[in-house]
Length: 144
Image (cartoon, rainbow, N blue to C red):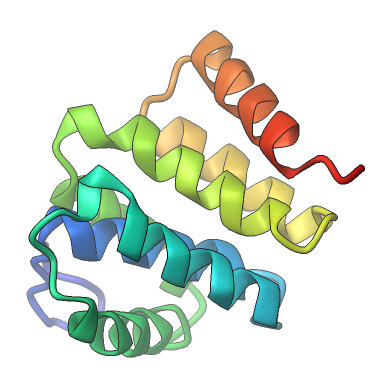
């Protein structure tokens, strides 16, 4: 995909999932330690990242941060890159990972909720499917 700066951006599915998590973390302008720990655990533990070299995470994080801070449409461009880089079977996974990163600190800010709405629409996640994924995230991240 060509973004506004004229660069062609092609990501592996794993990089697109990392972009999704970075976007979820950075959308409220502060990347929290809990969110970073969550992202690290996800990359090390989920089957979607099998075969992905964890040493590639910092580069993907940096390139995503550059994209989203590149202008007024950075978030929209990042979502478009994510959509174009993910096979349809991983779009629900991307939505679930965004939810996990947002839930990691125990609260969802308005900017984060707006991002989730954008992701749901742009990744073509059915409303009922999204509700189920959201309920699962709430159950996983509820504190005793």
